[in-house]
Image 1 (cartoon, rainbow, N blue to C red):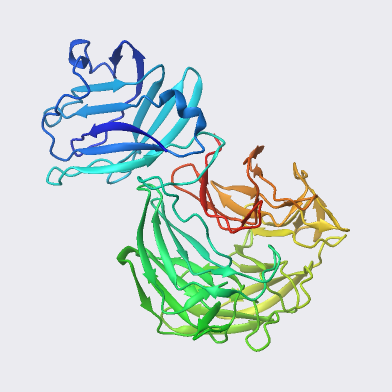
Image 2 (tube, rainbow, N blue to C red):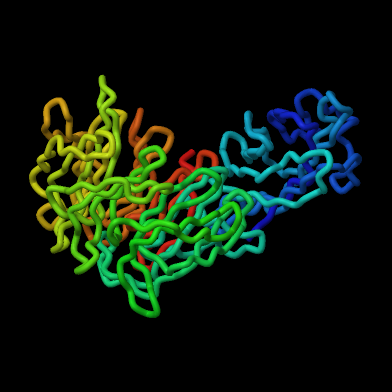
Length: 511
């Protein structure tokens, strides 16, 4: 692992835009740095060091293009009088240009740093909190350099990967500010990548990871070892873990328990309520202060269940309803009908008791606490197994993405319109595949990885929104969790790699 040191960063309790810094023999910075003012050696002591932060840029092993900068980078900012500008800005940087600016509106401020060589973007990094109060002591921080279009593994300051693997059935929940909670999971399971079997060797911990500070902030001992549960972020940096498979004295069974992880305090708050029934691999969506769970494994026999449950963290189960078809692992979306205030619950896809994909979807209207069956969405033909399903509000539609049709991987993306009630093809996938990881970020749809037609893990990435963009990760991942990461990065977690092993946490910056 290679490191680049940015030196000490100062601020006056307000935000300063540092602009572009060019290496021209002398350094010019926003006109506030005269030639004589920038002549100090980078190793000189820094005056007025109250509230300083030493930031080290960490280059991960994947960042091979950063080798020309291995000689090091040092950035030093020095405070002027209150209300004044920056006194000077020193940069020691061989043959490259550096740009650093604060995020506007962030309190405390975070800085983003870009490294360029000519017109080529070499890498981008975000610091953790870089502007401190006057009464705070100096602190040291690290920031991960992420090259564009490169899949990067976050590493600690010591160079060890952060969460190198996320076990099958673990939940990954983004809390914002670059923090995630990875809870539970199993060491092994008995099924395929898209429809795992009963988990074994379930873990009883949750890790709170700060991707900006590159640290595992806390490891929380869970009340129950848990896998294939639902997870929902709550206010105050907490996460609700609902149901799933739990390990009680070596016996694995379905749970009704609801456990709250207080990530900001590094502990579990335990559980005060139970679900109406034990369930795992359910579809889940938050409805204000309430949580809707759809389908999942049935408590007694492990087959899919045909039930819907609305759960309130303050009241427990509020109401229940029934699906037309039992289904495990369905896609669920809660949308508002255009032109009205009706709340509609879309239930799409999932698998039946035999492991076959379900093409037919269901739509419910939420009236008070009741679920009213509203419509049946007839599945597209031909049928596809291991496809990705998605219901969305903008636009009001449903999608079936890829899958296996007639024994071969499909590149079809089919869209259902509530106006016509029929399916129609849209722009096809760049690479035919099944078991795709699906997520939304910045209002656009991201399709990551999957299984290609030859049965090998795919590294294909597609962004669908205002325009279609494609990349290749350079490494295959099968059905990862796809979430917004810190800043403009996409967070990929879990799933399986090309060797079939559990994958870890990685970042992708689609510059």
